[in-house]
Amino acid sequence: MKNPSSTIAEKYLVLTPLAVTIIFLPITFDPINIPKLAFLTFGSFASLAIVISQIRHFDWKKFELLIILVVVFLIQLFLSFFVSGAGYASQFYGWQGRSSGLLAYFDLIGLLLVSAVFSSNELIQKLTKSILFTGLISIAYGLIQYMNLDPLKWVNSYSPVIGFLGNPDFQSSFVAFSAIVAFAFFISSGVGRLKRLLSFIYLLLAFIMIIGTKALQGIVLLALGFILLLIIFLSKNHKKFAAKVLIANSLIIAYFGVLGALNKGPLAGLLFKDSVIYRGDYWNAGWQMTISHPFFGIGIDNYGSWYRRARSLEATIRRGPDMVADASHNVLLDLSSGGGALLILIYIVIQILTLRSIVKVIMRKKEFDPYFNGIAVAWIAYQVQSIISINNLGLAVWGWIFSGCLIGYEINTRNSVGNKNSRTKGNSKNRIFKPRTQSEPIILVSIFLAFLSSGVLILPLVSSSAIFKSAIITADSKQIETALARFPEVPQNYLYAAHFFQVNSLDDEAINILKIATAKFPDYYDFWATLAKSPGISDEIQTQAKAQMKRLDPLNPNLK
Image 1 (cartoon, rainbow, N blue to C red):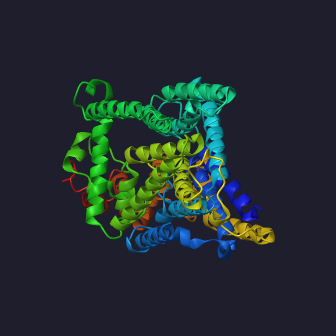
Image 2 (tube, rainbow, N blue to C red):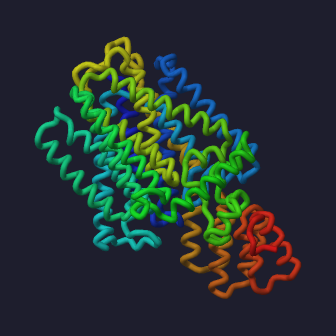
Image 3 (spheres, one colour):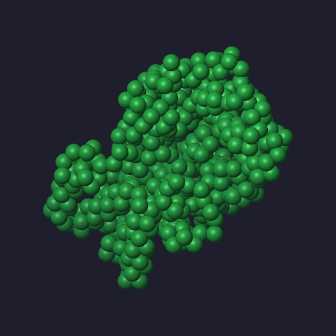
């Protein structure tokens, strides 16, 4: 008999990543990330509510290590939140355009824990279908953008193929994740002709889509995923020599590929891009933030306000002092710089635990399992992507849920995996919880309370963003000033409003906004720089602004 909590939890674990990936909301000033954070919060809180409502009926001893890691991770997050000295609102909701603050990481760690608890063959199969369906929607929308038929006029400086994620790199990466899962079915010997044909069509569309983004990330992840799946497939089909040959050739290609990306070797002309050097500058700045604030970091998702202070002189001069970044393009460094060394240490241990679980399950299984292997290799692709790119909630939600699901699967199916196929059921000793039939009312009440609490946390951000956008459209200075003062106050909105007033020759209003902004957010360089250049300011204010600019950008050769 299946517990109602399992059925309901599976629905949230399957639907939440789908919704977070494809949702966008044109009425908000940030139409991509704020809606994703909202749906992530609703899904995570509801999932956690199910576990809390049934907490007495789980065998928690099996998850002891994971629970310890989750608790320490959350404690370090909150310590950084309170001790780092950065603004509470910006840390809680994250940098606008990223939304990777404390709330987002709380949501992700919650989904990881819930997916671990409820992990099973059935959940993995449902997640497989979910990512394939979400990928198909993303491919379809991407093709519409590729043909310039998108009814929405996105403002971006990239390829028009940005999907639902706002960036061609993210679009190509997510489509690659889903294509990796499809490839697992394409090569599986236990798959029928129709499913293999559908997998081939899916792969063809995905490849066209990735090429259309003009982003290298998707190609790299696709190649990595295909190679890993082929190695597993060959090993499980007693073709270990072929697997070893493939591994050796792959390592050689990877070696020359890395050299090429670093502008060395025969592939340098094909693979090297200036962005590799710039990414190195971003990484170095993130590392400098980490070693200068090793215990609690500079504040969660606060990289953007610290970049100028942490970058090297070479990075300052290379592209000019005004070329900056608001993320390190490396999730590990974003975590270590924002939350301290302990936070990144726990994160790494969780990833090692996930990888260990993958290896153990693959070793136990006698045959190639397209469901488990597809999810496992897609998770590996996400980890690679997270090392070379910016955090994105539409990608992260899959990575964290997969991580929990893979860890939980290894735990929940011990002594029952390794049989004939992926549909093997665990015995009664390995059940996650005791079956109950009277728990539905408690679960529904818990979910209702979870929606209320998550709404209290996230709706102010959605509301303030929508009101600010509406005020900008009306071009009414009073409405804009009122919208700026709404909780949570977003620093970037103050800067946008100041530029808006200046463009419309409302210099006094712009100066007033900048004075308020510099008082509330004194560590944001752009406020002081804009104020220093504003017409009509006094010499005293200009001198003060330039002194603050020098404090926040000490290696800028243009500041004397």
